[in-house]
Length: 449
Image 1 (cartoon, rainbow, N blue to C red):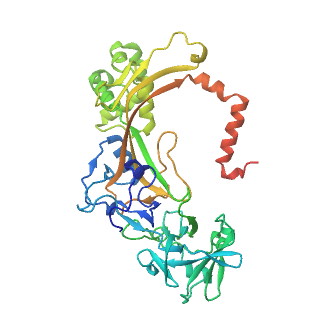
Image 2 (image 1 turned 90 degrees about the vertical axis):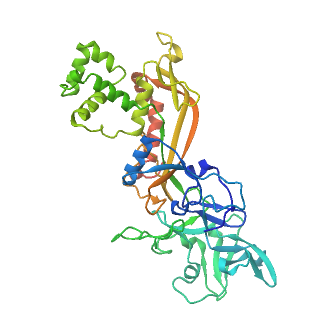
Image 3 (image 1 turned 135 degrees about the vertical axis):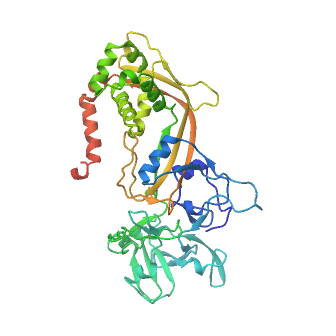
């Protein structure tokens, strides 16, 4: 791993953009951010958010996960190692030599072992070297240097004569370049885009202590693909985030237990609705709690367990849409406080389709990274849930904790009446626009016209 002081990132960037497995450019080299196995030598700052911890553990398939903030920079150059270690990657460099070979600009392609102090010596002069832009990766997140000698010679070779990159344009386009060996063999860079050229993935994970079998035991390894290491598709962090809400579950559980002598015989949602309509005590005690949610807690109380896990955004949406007046406490150090804004009755003009406006005065959002993908991003669905079957690259060999950050702010929540939304969706212009988006996300429909 590289030494301390190589560079710096904001703590939020580590979770949202440049987590373990990401490649970043430093002044003279390119590095890959080290995995959680390497994060040592700092006092970890615990971030407590039970809802998110439970969700992350469920997605990763582990019993328990703890959340910690990335390490903060320590202004002590003589102190112990701190921060997040990085690994130099890629290990191949292009030397900044201005030479011409016919119409081409040609530059040496050298391994890091051929550099001395980061410089390349050629004809008794020392030249700076820049990390090569092209690497190889697979859809399981593995990444490695291209085997340049094998690529240039079209297979295994014992030749180790100097390599050169010839560029016939200034755009950096693959079709304008080729790799040339001094033995006379050469190959166009554009051929690296073919799926059968770079070979099968060997499971390299330079951000972790060891690689793995690509495809798993007995599985088929993926074919390696050309990747421009600074491209936008080189790294997609996979994240989950939740709002720090007052414990709605505790409030519902307390309400159910307070009415247990009456609710214990409610054997269905319909029976609960009947009790609510007949008894003012039930109606007042379950105010702001819908029948379906209350019934889940009744069944859980009867069976002596906690209610089933619900999607992330369901709790947040219900908290903002069902509270009668306010949610949380208005404290300077509070995590959440929201107040319903009373609208004029009846709603008219631009307020006609609006059902509720909630002013969120205090807000805490916690975001955790679980893994990452390359080439294609995988994001949470509309309910904030992640696909459990997605092939995500791991941040640690045996995860027991995940990096997380918290953000504080404020906002406004607006909900609209369902009939107004249905009327808007039925407009021809909206339907046409919706069809464009649906076709874009449907691989069976082909490209858009």
